[in-house]
Picture 1: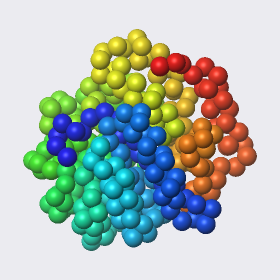
Picture 2: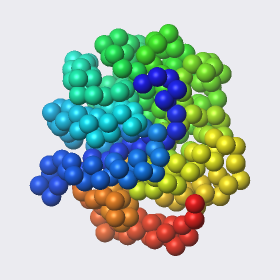
Picture 3: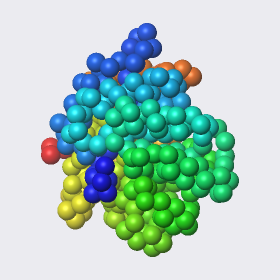
Length: 299
């Protein structure tokens, strides 16, 4: 990937499972084409929405190989690095590169809240090992490790870091990162229900969640913002927002997967330890979905 490819809508794809809890590659192939036909600019595998921690290492590598083959160079394939130890992370990077990954989205160490020095060394070590470009993923709410704008300025000397997925939910971070690093990094919104605000602050792209069910609306919203058609973008965003709110909370994976199923483009199946939504939770997601569909705009 070159730096110009880090822009636009990158779906954080869900991992599809069969009734036997195996990887459902047929379902994932169909869903991939659904995304590509809508004009997404890249795809991200094995992220939080992809249930990365519930997958074996062999499954992760198999996923990368499958998507690299299926995509066939049409858009970049970015694999998420979310491991608990540095050795496992480096091993995955090596195997994923051999399997065809075009780039990596790298999380801080999992299950260990590293301090600032440890976090910076973690990213430097992985970037030194990888021969593909990197997006750094900052999500202190979910993972307990926070990369501040000053930390990104510290990492700016690492040439292989091309992009940042900022998921602190504090839109002020976008402006502060730009102030400290200029145009050094491509900045991606990482939380669905602040996408409009992030684009207004100059975000280059969106690692999106509800795109897995609504790729046309997601791509259209990005295009409107990129064209400075803010009134049209705001109107679409206001319709989309109740659905986008489903991208937050402890059960965002179950919520988004249920929307996929309701929309006929996926399954609500998740892998343990996750469990399906209970009846009350599912009814609320169904209500949000039905309400949105009753007023879905024509694009």
